[in-house]
Amino acid sequence: MADEDDIILSELDDEELVQQMHDDLYDGLKEEIEEAVNILVERGWTPYDILTKALVAGMTVVGNDFRDGILFVPEVLLAANAMKGGMAILKPMLVETGAPRMGKMVIGTVKGDIHDIGKNLVAMMMEGAGFEVVDIGINNPVENYLEALEREEADILGMSALLTTTMPYMKVVIDTMKEKGIRDNYLVLVGGAPLNEEFGKAIGADAYCRDAAISVEIAKDMIARKHNQMGA
Ligand code: B1M
Image (cartoon, rainbow, N blue to C red; front, side):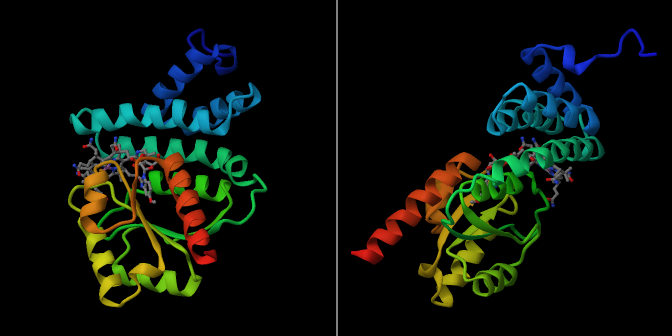
């Protein structure tokens, strides 16, 4: 028999459920997060709204308490694991849009950095928008990026960094591309919480992308412009 205090997720209204998801993410409760994501899908929520309003917003609370020394790495890893459980349910919905192929992107987190949730989200949304995405994972030295770009004959390089100590590595990658004379063969998009527009410009990226949805918009726009230029 269920304990009197047990919360039945399906009995909560949308607002209460989203609040409960923030709490469950905080507590690293993967199964509860998965159940709640399924409930919101059944209630007709778009995958994007579930991602942003329930999962990403919940992770922001986790991030703030991590910053303030209230949560520590093990708890944050559990929260990240719960978030990934929710994202795995949404992935097919974001990916199977039947959109025409737009171009190919190689994406990875830079050397020294193991954060991958944001990168994974960008990869999913890019796939959903019709881009082919090759995810080379975390902790990538410059050689990994260059090798993948060439092997995959990609159009776009996406780099992610979540630490102020690792974001300068993006410049190392771009400078190496310049040295090798291949910089202009690719669109270079960068993102991650500590970056901003100014930083993107300073390191010579084509664009800084604030979030996954904006990454898609920028990539679509830039690829279309590139095709137009080539056609002119
Ligand atoms: Co880390 N961590 N962490 N962490 N962690 C942050 C980034 C931090 C801000 C927390 C804090 O203090 N508030 C802080 C960095 C401070 C700083 O540099 N100024 C920090 C720290 C300090 C650390 C460690 C050093 C802690 C330690 O060990 N003492 C350590 C470093 C490890 C390493 O990388 N070498 C560390 C470890 C970890 C965990 C392993 C525990 C875990 C990562 C698990 C994983 O990713 N699998 C973790 C987590 C989860 C976080 C927070 C809480 C959440 C990050 C996240 O997933 N956000 C984070 C706090 C925060 O950001 N609020 C924090 C959700 C995600 C959807 O957002 O990643 O921003 P985000 O991605 C967005 C956009 O930024 C953008 O689009 C995404 C989707 O909209 N985007 C791109 C991201 N990449 C893109 C690439 C693109 C385009 C857009 O390419 C085109």
